[in-house]
Length: 452
Image (tube, rainbow, N blue to C red; front, side, top):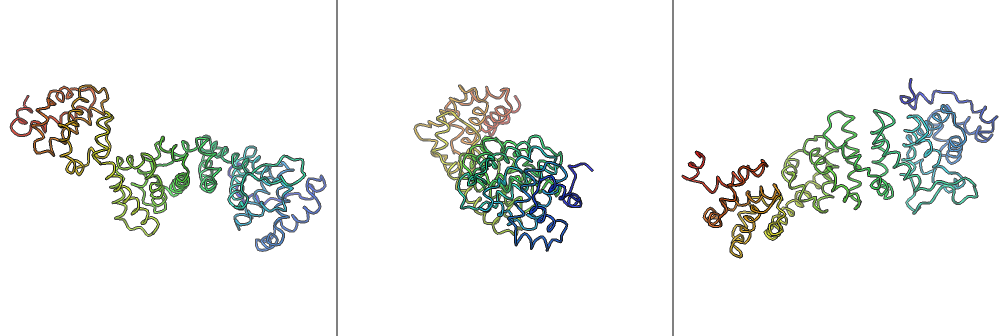
């Protein structure tokens, strides 16, 4: 069996010649006694040993990984540590005990991330992630294991560990060491590590978000759903970090998140995406993008479903209210007026909102129909197909909603300008110019127009 397919159980069936290592002075007599007492014993007996003298076992395990390079032995000790921490993750706190100040408990795992086979890499990553997560909150700053000692060995700082881990995780996302497990393991570790501000910073600087975005897509199998959930969990954690939010705005992450929440039936996936969207809503232009992508309708559909998670229901209500507030704000006539006067026409929410036109139609009469005149000027001068299409559409909306719309637009000599655009090379311009002309020719004139 290939090393990449090894399991912890298989590795722990091996017999390691501890006595030989003592003879060659790679482990001490005390270390040998500890190992004899611990190795191949029942889980309950080992648990008692760890409760009574866990620090001594951490010390001997780390020293073996530091001094012994035989692959089978390294795998075995990593499997012992993995088993120890899996049974009780709180034991990871032992690696931060001040009694180990003379030991660099980070360095062996950090080194093995890059030098071992897949089994060694995966276990080193998992163990380091657990150690990082168990770091006492009182230890602020990049304090190292070993800085308080007189040891000549260069100690590894906590910042070194985080940067090294992030670098390895990004490499796995780009070019995984294991074709099937590299990416899931990396995302799983990231989901645990991104609670650390330093990890968020390092990950964003390494452009890690660009690597996560392609993983956000609707999933069907159990394995792909779990990967999707943990990927979205990473994005949610990053949505609390301002530089990450700025970076998210430049990627395709938002449309992907909305596509996932629209199609997913797994409650935990929907929950973490909705929580992420709620965090992003008040930031930058995310609200306008969400409205353009149809999120208000999706939220209404989600609210109609039977969810059991109260946090999800609350987040959906908050997201719905936030979107409503933004629709009102984005649909104000002042904002529309500014958009037209600057000539920066785009499909912002107000253009296709019937309420905007119904509530603001009389405002178009201000300053002798100034806004209409500017829209018509855009038809003459703009080289931007999007601006031309929106201007035509807005004129058609004015014609539809204002009682004298057709007469006013005709008097302003808009008809000729719009008709010129009916043969435009851009389909969007052609479509909206046709819509505008149809509304101008309503009635008897409309029929004759169609026969031309």
